[in-house]
Image 1 (cartoon, rainbow, N blue to C red):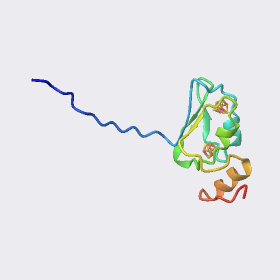
Image 2: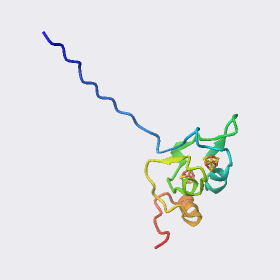
Image 3: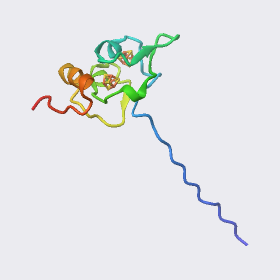
Length: 98
Ligand code: SF4
Ligand code: SF4
């Protein structure tokens, strides 16, 4: 008799935005450009996303991070600060850069 391993389905849901702690240098630019100040510094001097639900996925933090440490599942904005500000007033806004 041959036993086959049972198949296992694992679903992993990633947060819509996170910061790679290995890459983050703690420069703080992401917190400066985010219209909501969502990236916050931690005890080790690096930055993390604590309030994921408030993120509009404008991508300003990702676009301006010099270490490419910001991980966005879906980029909804073009990443410019004008767009980030517009999304802070209306997350559905999509009227930047044409
Ligand atoms: S901009 Fe990038 S490297 Fe700088 S604190 Fe934010 S995530 Fe870290
Ligand atoms: S994607 Fe935009 S709203 Fe979300 S954390 Fe980055 S700058 Fe802030």
